[in-house]
Length: 477
Length: 160
Image (cartoon, rainbow over all chains, first blue to last red; front, side):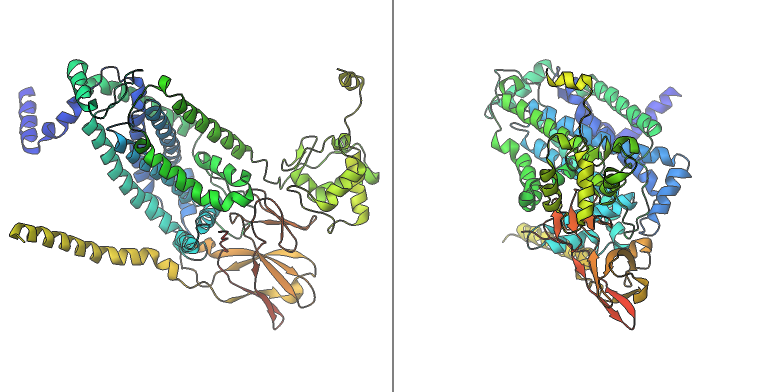
């Protein structure tokens, strides 16, 4: 029996040439000390495979019709066996892929692996990063709930800022001049056929380059890259101390890949897929569109950027960052690779992480958005149940002041906290501010009647820190 | 030119021709929406008396030229205000910053955007936040006692 199996395999391999095809790739020598740091790339690939498998599975039930996709999503999430789990896997798989791409990129940058002769490994990877983000964005749209339709509008507006051809780009994205039947089909084609095809092609190229140049050996301080002699030294060192990729190097990739898949499955089970919002009806204006977490930092950029610069930053920013990333290896492809000799490389990575991290936190809190549904002020907070202060408080709510200002933790965070406003502003200051508005505050002079203004001012003038013995003591500290 | 060189050129030319035969209709099909005409119809919103003078209300319209499978996505909204007996004005619901739907706050007479904090006065001019332009106005008229709104594309703000 065993001999039959062996002979069958030998016959198949002879006719199919399997060992000849993958043998060299499996057995090629890799640097002996390339260990756990080198697993981010394969982890990205594992996440990608999860995406392909779960994506194909979801497409068995998905309907790319503007009128039915939302129902199909509800069916997948609520009724179909494993539907909710698969959606969760697809979502957390996407998250894992974005995270692993980021980690892989940071690691290859810090290790100087992009230097000669691996410039194109880096640049093809940058394109793969771009495709991954496009997949993330279009994937959120295929959820086809209210947030998805408004995200299409935001994408169209964003593209519309491009000079000269902006309107065309916007129409191309919308599939017309408004959201409609053509819109979703376009994003389906992009998410399911176009970009995945590009991903397959560039992943193939990326992997070919890994084999072609070999993976970069871990950097050693004081051992710079000299393009003239690098290849020879690399191969000599491999011959001397390299180990075959399979299984000496690959087992770590399998360990990390398994951990990743288990983590994705755990998140899919524990947290479940992203909740479906309201139906994709553009006439429902109670909307609060937010991108999925991997683009939340950009949502914050759009809110926090000085408006005068916005037109330039929105167009030139991504273009410049993209071009800069693509040509990083062309700017500097030789010299030291060790991070300890490249403090600026460490600084660039740290600053990028801090910048994206803080923008991400800002995006998650989005204090610039008005609170459309603030908790009403209680009599205890107002400190009165009738009279001008009380009426002023009610006006403070009905005139939308509370949408943007906090009073005792109730309200919005767009403007300053007014809990103790009377401690810092005089009566006249308050009146002037309300009537004329200010930085990011509308002027209310035309919309408030004099008695309304007086009552709101009365209410605000009552917003003082209560002077208790403790507080009084604090003042003297 | 050698025979071999000739065959190379012929093969490449044929490859190019094949690509064009398949590619031209593909590109044409994909960019076709760029040439679709914007909706250009007056849509009835209801009788004039149905709207109170001075009130700003949300009206829903359905794009008459929408594709049969558009479903609820063929719907859109506008903010309509009856200014006087026979005069109406209508605002696009799209914030001029990133297109998010602005909400009318009747108490403060402001349009507020949920996305990046854009605020507009009741006449549509920018009150605060990042929007670069006032809210876009829709054409609206009264005919035979009925209020009519002209269907319009989603306004795309261009700043440069």
